Length: 366
Image 1 (cartoon, rainbow, N blue to C red):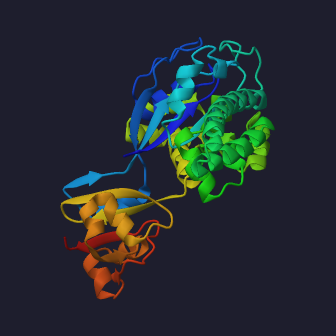
Image 2 (spheres, rainbow, N blue to C red; image 1 turned 180 degrees about the vertical axis):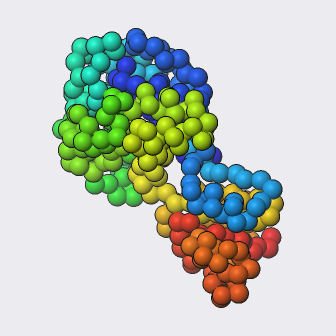
């Protein structure tokens, strides 16, 4: 299953424009709130220059990149936690994603109406954060009240649930998102079924005007978002949804020329994906042969059998060993045979922790 990132934000901050550019899924984009009513989903191949180089050297029959799923979710307004606007639907859709990309408007344009009538990225962020927290408080209160009844019957599990939900609720009432709370494994067991919205990891995508796309963190309004993100321990990516739309319509060759003229090294899509990977602590490993070169996404710290299980459960269940070569070694020596001749193709066992960029073959027996 592809990594899923929900694109959220107030109406008219550039969510759908960005989504269209990222996925070519054709979500309607218009200068009024709620032009995206149902969540649009687009699956995007993850760009990785390492894979391009592996393909050049191995010359496989087919290539399968790993993917990331972007979900464009209807704009949120004040009162969403009470059902205002499309609030209930918005909040329900967020529960399904792995991470949240919060698009924040960092540009001035009198022709694009802001739902609050002003450009203030910190105030925009506060609206979203408040509504998510209010909805979480509703979920916590409901679970706490249910647990309180069970605890009266001396059910130890319900007694624990009451203690946890009450403690988390008190912090939420003080404006603390769940992801910022100190929680142990027992706490998480209680909270996981609630799918709390503020438990989702978040990064900010500052949508800047075309003229400021190349300025990155120096673009107007961005410094305010960066300061807030630093306080939260969050990530920030700077993009221009308008430029991304133009890039998406070009051929690969035209994109290179366009980026050069715009003073950009790469499309904003690449930055967004790298930011999501860092946020979720994700690595990519590769399998490579004449038939196929494929990229696989794992969590940092995954051991070899777990990585094998991404291919097929039988690979993990019957894992014997993994043959591993480093990407840098393949590039330096040009082929797997040459890497092996240098003694750099390693045989690793069940305790091997897979590294980002590893190229692997698995031996198994079921």
